[in-house]
Amino acid sequence: MNVQSRYQAWLNSPAIDPQTKQKLRALSATEREAVFCSDLTFGTGGMRGQLGLGTNRLNPYTVARATRGLGDYLLQSGGRQVAIGYDTRHGSLVFAGVAAGVLAKMGILVWLYDQPLPTPMVSFAVRELGCDAGVVITASHNPAQYNGYKVYGADGCQITDAAADAITACIERVGYDALSWLAEEAAMQQGLLAIIPQRIYRMYIEQTLACRISAQGDGCPLRVVYTPLHGAGHKPVTDVLKHLRGVRVIEVKQQCLPDGDFPTCPKPNPELAQALALGLACAKREKADLLIATDPDCDRVGVAVREVGSQYRVLTGNEVGLLLMAYILSQKAMRPEHAPVVVKTVVTSDLAFAIAAHHGAQVREVLTGFKYIGEMIGRMEALGEAERFAFGFEESCGYLAGTHVRDKDGVMGCLLIAEMAQFYASGGLSLAQALQALYARYGYMGTRLLSYDIPGSLPMAVMAETMRRLRAQPPTQLGDKPIARTVDYLAGIKGMPASDVLCYCAHEGLKAIVRPSGTEPKVKVYLSAMGANEAEAQRLLDRMSSQAESWIVQNRTHD
Image 1 (cartoon, rainbow, N blue to C red):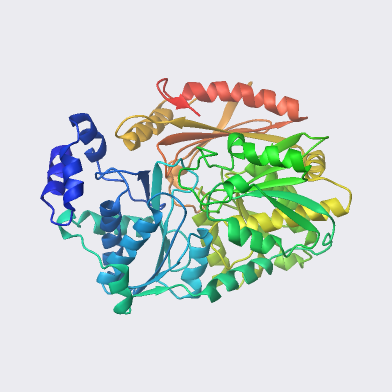
Image 2 (image 1 turned 60 degrees about the vertical axis):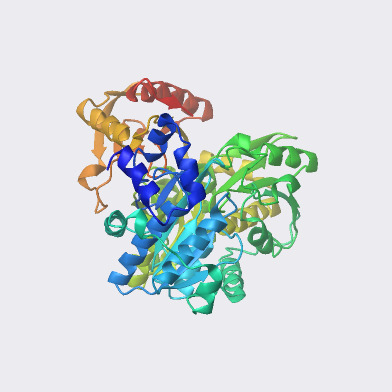
């Protein structure tokens, strides 16, 4: 279909309300092109896009169409129950209601959270309630004009590539004239919609607390500033932190109220220092030991730690993950035949291998995306080895210990980070000092993420062309060394599914990984460099950054 046919299909559909049609007729040709140029892409991360009218935007009708396709897929495979959650974004509550109404009209029982709660709590509810799928309305850490639709399988993991392809095929068969859904009250009256009971929330908190690693630092005074960045993390995070005796939690009041505009942090991504500005100001006033921040759907955690005096250092996701990994492994005493297993993504710091070797643990690598970590836990569980899973992490501030959730978990992350900080504090170390001790023992590996926006109405095609060009004309230099080895994950490496990822390796610990984002119109480059100290590693990363910039076509903009 072209722009005009998509536009006309909406105007002709009896499912589209008159007010929306009136707005459609008022669109200029340029606006019409932007919002009807294509359908939102549905993949393993579901779909994500800007809010607004049209097939290329998130709105009740694109959500209804995706849900109808999901429902058809479930019915074909015998699925009959779905859990739904949502965050604090604009449209999230409405879209959750639309999704619930579509599934209910199809005869599928829906379990719906009655308030914004973290994304990992849907993964948990799917498994506890015996559901066949889960849906979360969220755009994670994107700006306010975005929302999204994330789908989980019966195992609590984000859907596989095969499931995404099958659901996409079902969605493509759904016309906008075929959309309809039940109102919440009607769905409840028919016994097809139920509120997820409070016991599920309590069980989630209890099982999260059961994953505490050590009580050795319990009672040591620790001042922690916490901000949910206007998102869904406030209640569950404070509910778990209050169980750490000696920890005083100081909330960033301006950011505790849910607000889909994210007025104090236009980019509510805890990986970004600017998103932590209010939290850092509060930490300095309060002389806090630690700042933790969760993104709007509370699956990621950003961290800043006090250094000397009133100075704070924002840690990278790699640094937090490596600290947690070393802490967790140091507290585990397991027989060699039951060696602990750490699961990381291929773009996450390779310093994990040295830490694992020191503690007699194993590292298993998976493709980028926490669903692959969740799937690895499932495979270990099937082999009767679930107790060997010690920790899973990715460089984008995602962490998980325990097996009751199969996705990155910001609530779990906050608990373990605060516990770890308290543990080190009881021995007279700050987290900043613990990090320096880690580098002193295992070597200094600096990492950097470069993210390049892909403009235009068809970014996926441009991203694919960028990767094709890199394969046809590969770079030859990295830092001050020639590239010695190229790994193309499109061929399927070490039993992993084929993935559009390129890895360039030079001697002496220099590496660059290039991949298109699966959820945003961006090409990402992940750099890592081993240096004798921080200054040397940063110098190498600066040089590598300039080289990576030249690999991406000139009209891209760099975040």
